Structures are given as structure tokens and as C-alpha cells.
Length: 245
Image (cartoon, rainbow, N blue to C red):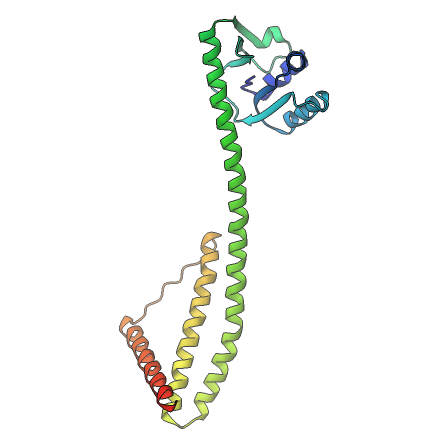
């Protein structure tokens, strides 16, 4: 069964069409499969129908999007018979007012074509449910990732300020030129690490669309020179450490 609107499902349930189909399915030991737009009322109705079916799995329902363009309720039964009812106005309370032209057929070609349409929609609804589950899992993982980035950035930022403060104090007190230069390297790299943690936090702000861009001018030549200077000092320090061994 395919119901293009929730009202169509409710009206058919009221007139007893769905319970009759369930009763026929019980007698033939088959399953009634229903495609219907979902909402809280429909889900409640479905639970009632499943309770009516007791312990036997006679009804299987999957939810689809509301079909605003189509005006037909398609019923496919046992791949032998088909009943197509035009849904004239699903807001009407009586079947006579709601339903328009109806076609009943035992033609194999007609029934098989409707069955093929139903099977295709049924598979699509299954894929849609799987995609929804994957999407929810991705949302959870994305949230966990953002939380981890935020925590990691804060944990990295906390020890940087004491390092900078103590290095600045030592730098102001020592007279040795070599130690002064090494402390200068420590301070520059600590500040670089500080900027890195701020950049990591900015990533979370970008994703939450709360980042305020601040444009600043800088001297690219100075940045490259300082980086090369730090590298040369590190190389020299490693060479001396190796010689001492």
C-alpha cells in the first residue's frame, strides 16, 4: 500500500481498509507493507496496528516524504490484483468525498507495473533510513571531534603563558649572549605555539560561524628570517650536543 498523504492513511484506517488488509494477510500468511508519510500521529496509529497484529509480523511500515504532486493511493495485493484510487481531497471525512476515480485490475501487466513501482519505492525508503542513521552518526562524530579540538586547544594554551612569562623574566636577567639568543628562540616558538592554538580554536569558530576576522599587516621577510634563524640555532644546538657525547 502506498499512501501519498497522512490524511489518506488515517481515512483508510477509519473506514476499515487497513484492518481488512491485515486480516486478509493473516489468512494468507503474508505481510502487508505500507509506505506513508510519517509524523507522530501516524507512528501512533502504526503502533496500534502492530499491537492488533499480536505476535505475528503481518504489517511492515516505512515512512516516505509527503507526496504533494500526486493524487493517487495505490494498493498492490499479492501481485495478483491492484486497486488504484484517485485521492481527490484527503481533507474530507468520508470515503465518497475523498476518493475520485478508482481502478481495479487483475491484468498481469498492470499489476506487475504497480508492483515494480512499489518495490522501487520500498528499496528507496530503506536506503533513505540507512542514510538518516549514517547522517546521525556523522553528526555525533562531528560533535565529538569539535569538542576534542576545543579541549586540546585549551589544554595546549594553558602552559604556554607560564613558559612565556618565565622566559621573559630570565631573558631580562641574564647577560650571556648565547643564552640570551636561546631564550629568544624559546620565546618566539612559544608565541608561535600560542598562535597555533588560537588558530585551532578559530577552526571551531569558523564551523559555528562565530569567527570575527582581524586583518593585520606583517612583514613576510621578517617571518622567514626568524624561522631560518631558529632552524640554524636548533642545528647548532644539536651539533654541540652531539659533540659533547
